[in-house]
Image (tube, rainbow, N blue to C red; front, side, top):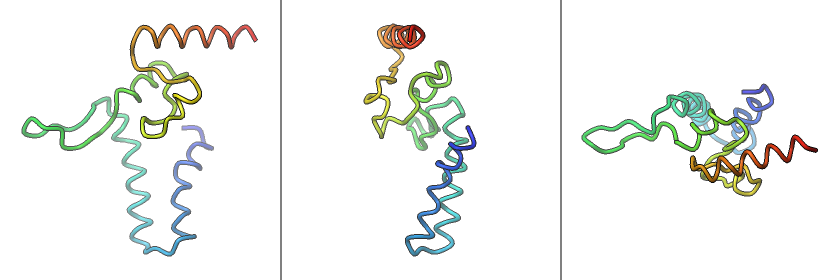
Length: 108
């Protein structure tokens, strides 16, 4: 992550200095965000036990971002990528749209 990205990512914990909360909430908040970044970069969709997915670890959406850094900068929950035209679903059509968009950007 870029240092500014870190400030935004972990800066969400500042809400606990505005909204009265227990120090335990702050600790849990920081632990969740610290561990969430690690688990979503494992390359696995989730942990399966007894044939069912028990824990979501990462998403295919984010793994495409690591293959093509120009796409899927957000999450599936917040549709930034769809709004800004950077969504890639892994299909050949999405790859063609990405190449067209990058070629147009190079011409400018």
